[in-house]
Image (cartoon, rainbow, N blue to C red; front, side, top):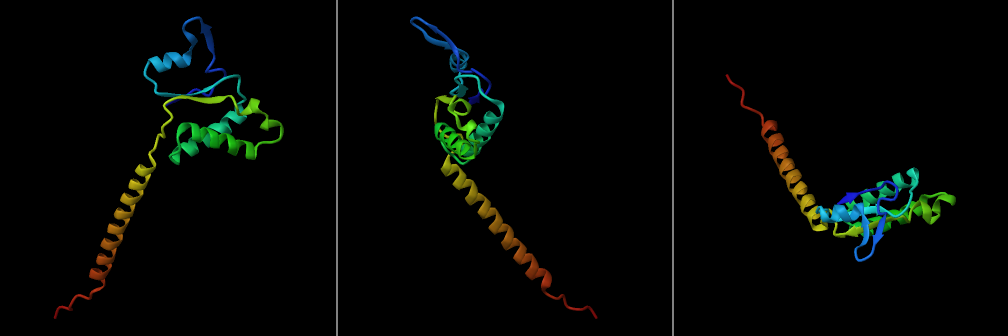
Length: 140
């Protein structure tokens, strides 16, 4: 996935028989499976907030479009009235592969592995405490 959060990153020239010729199209042909682009000039402050929320939701295992949708909703919940205008948040779109970057079942597997390691560590710690607490016989 490539995120192009600068201004007009989804813009291009419409050519007869070809459609939209843009930087996004070139990246797709170069092998980029998914893109996040802007459709118009975007404002820096709102872009920063929106992208932070977007990456947060991606880390939870949401699909790219769902993460962007949730980021937009969270942005709107926290935005000042003037900054809730669609100009500030609606310009971002997802193109291409929409699958999550992190699979939810992969997160569960990682959590289980961490739990196993912690359990083994605790068992080893208990054994060490028991062994060290036993008094050694005094030598005569």
